[in-house]
Structures are given as C-alpha cells and as structure tokens.
Length: 91
Figure 1 (cartoon, rainbow, N blue to C red):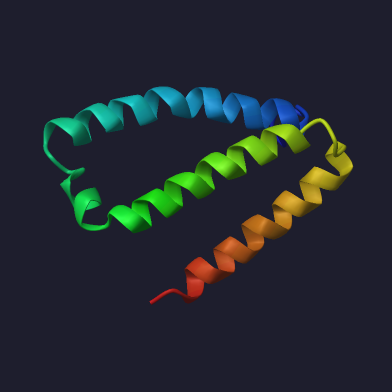
Figure 2: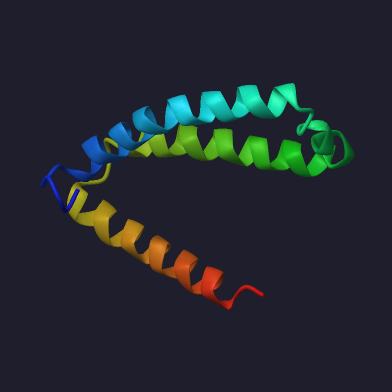
C-alpha cells in the first residue's frame, strides 16, 4: 500500500491472492507428514478457531464496501499496533 500507492481494499485482496499458493503448499505438506493429528486432540479448540475465521472473513467481506479507506487504514493500523505490543510482551 505504501510502496505502490494502492488503496487498502486492493492491497488486502492481493495479499490474499498471494497467500493462497503458500497456504495450499503448506496444507499439502502438513497433510502428508501427519501434522494435523494434533487437531484431533484439540478438536473443540480447532473448531472454534475455524468458525471464528470463517465468520470474520464473511463479516469482513460484507463490510468491505461499507467503510471508506479513510476509516479502514487507521483501524487496521491500531489492530497491527495492538498485535505487535501483545507479541512483544508475550513470554
């Protein structure tokens, strides 16, 4: 966004597009070596995370056309700063 001067909605969409091949390759590799077995032991937690992810993606997609860039950019900046602060404090 900052480098090419694109709007936040285009950048978000392109970010998802670029991430998709990486996620597919990772899913294939994890599936082959049995790494998903841990999900069976934590089924409820995995289902809650999956449901939250789907709900967040649907809600975000619906709200995308509602809010202008001038609102989205500061909100996303705050979310990133809070996430960075929580990550920095994590032991």
